[in-house]
Structures are given as structure tokens and as C-alpha cells.
Amino acid sequence: MKLENCNDVSPPQDTHSNADAADEIFVPPLNFAMVDNGIFRSGFPDSANFRFLKSLRLRSVICLCPEPYPDSTSEFLKANGIRLYQFGIDGCKEPFVNIPNDTIREALKVALDVKNHPLLIHCKRGKHRTGCLVGCIRRLQRWCLSSVFDEYQRFAGAKARVSDQRFIELFDISGLKHHPLSFSCSRK
Image (cartoon, rainbow, N blue to C red; front, side):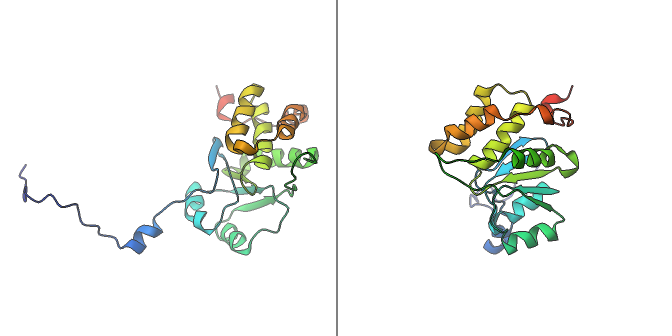
């Protein structure tokens, strides 16, 4: 092997312009994480996240916010064949928190259906409403409550709500146990 220009220690030249490099940046939404194979969680995505979301090849998005979906995000979903399931849960603050059991149950049915995977679950910041839905998924996966609460608290941070954790603990998962579990921890 022959080495040429051994005295040249300059960094390699960038063949892309700065604009091209910016187009290749993948920016995940706030509080983004993988929940399980085919299920992701985050805060509300915006246009800066579209390239990253496209790389996930999503089939579905569960939005837990009651506000109308932004036009630009709706257009992105439509252009990429991504189905939106919107379950409007108010982002209430303690002590007057009302997390509707029926709405969480319906959102869980969508999340558990592998025909909707890959799937993104989100609310405004990816903390409380998303944390409650993911916490219920973890219960279906038979996680111990201390682990469920630890995950919830990692995403909620200083704004963790005892009422959310109480909701997760008391949520009746028995009616959902007949849904096939497609989670990685349930595979043999």
C-alpha cells in the first residue's frame, strides 16, 4: 500500500455544502424514546422532526391532545401514508386531574393492534398523558409497578404527578388481556 502526501495533516474536505448537511440532520421530537418493537413515544412533533419521523416508517400516530392537529403536521402524515388517531385528553394539572378510562382504553386498543405498527404515541411534551398510556402498556407487559413509575418519572421529571401514577396503578387492564401481546418481552 502506498501513502501519498504523508505531510498533509489537514482535515478532509467536506464535499457537501452546509445546506446539504442541514438536510441530512435527523432531529427526534422532545422526549422521544422506543417503548417496544414498533411503538415509540414523544412530545408533539413539528416540522424539524419530519425527516426523523419519516425514517421510522410509521403507519400510525396516536395523539393524546384535544387541540386541532396543525396543518403542516397533518399534511406530513397524509403525504407519508400515516394514519392519525386522535384521543383528546385535556392536559389538566393537579389536583383536578381527570384522565378518562374509556379514552385510554380505546388508545390502548389502537396501540396493541400490530396493524398500526410502527406507531408513535405523543402528547404536548411526552410526559403525563403519554406517560399514562405507556404506563398502562407496561402493566400489560407485566412490569412491576416500581419499574413503571420509575420510567414515568424519568420522562415527567420534576413535574411527575402522583395522580398519574395512581391512575396507572388502578387502571383495569383485565378487559385488554384478550388482545394479543406483540411485545418483545412476550416472545419466546
